[in-house]
Length: 368
Image: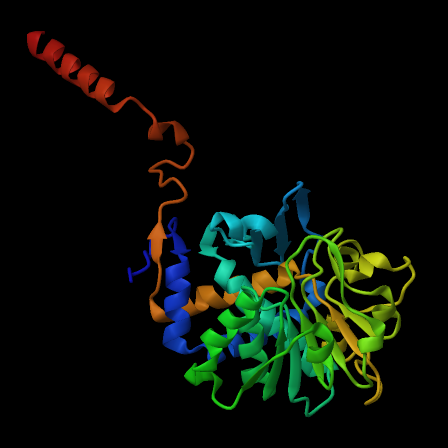
């Protein structure tokens, strides 16, 4: 651990190791809860944000995106990729970093890893939505897709929503075995039952909540309408870019659908399959009491989650405050420190030649 610099022009840097250390010190349950609270606070002031859909550059193998947002005091952006074949190269499917800056000066206050933090904030957002939309007393969740995000979803729903049983399925049995290995003997998961299932259908049967978090960049059909049961809540996380879906269109038609930022979800979420006038409700409206969530116990609700920049703003705000409290991370000189802020050239002024000129001038004075 390095004490953060206090120089006004220094930027706090948080590495993946820094964020992991903070999670271990505070505890994963408290961090997830703190992130959920921060995201809820920002959803409740939704109109105060300057919002836009993320900017994406698509290629054959994946996507690279920038996600900017600002309020009157802070600006943030996230750089994030999604490359499903990366694991074959020993790289993560999703990798990210982010910046939090001061609006009044433009000074970057924080540059932080966001790969680990994104997994935590995505899980916290999932629970925030489920608290508002799922049936009270939900205790069983199906988790379809047991890759890098799965443990975080499981921990969040267990600690923050009281889920007692998680029914697991992934087309790759090694992914499920990894999840069971990570959580099966984890003291943070005392009281959580993990049930390995043979198919998506088997996992979904009898579940109060169904979370889909698959990675393939394809128009897949993970959940079909005949898998839906009265009162179920669907947490669709994996369909998050054009051409990438998880749910059959009839699943949306059979559900009351909620989104983060409608203009973005229409292009990127499972909602991309639907007609332009298909009705959805933005989650902030439910949290603010402007719209209803679940209308009755038998209704099927769906959170078509694609991830929105405000959630990263909240996460960066939270980890910045946590790092300052724990004195974690280090200050870096990302911005030039100038004796005269109007003289940027001073950084590259030929120092050696200036010294030679000074010595020559002194010699001339002595000779005179």
